[in-house]
Length: 99
Image 1 (tube, rainbow, N blue to C red):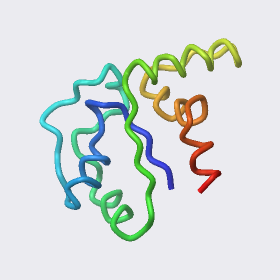
Image 2: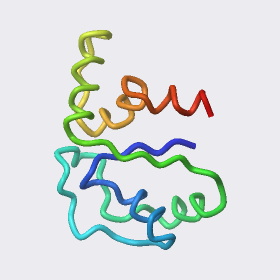
Image 3: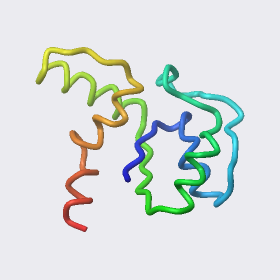
Image 4: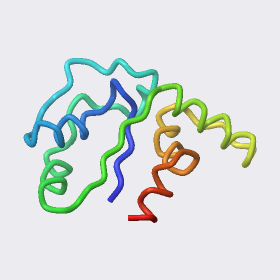
């Protein structure tokens, strides 16, 4: 599994780092509409039972991916979707393929 989040909305990455179910004090990313200060208990359980590649990108990277997607596909999506798009437009997918 691949988990893409923006800095400031990176609750899953915080769990990976702490190796426990943690909660962010606030969502500070511009990508707020899909943000959660704490991942669900089920998501945390999945994280501990399965390999998950967690990557955190900047708001700038997320917005840049949204702009590229709009230019390529003619569809505008919010910055929260840009984190996932950044996996494709950035180096994340290429790195995973190499591994």
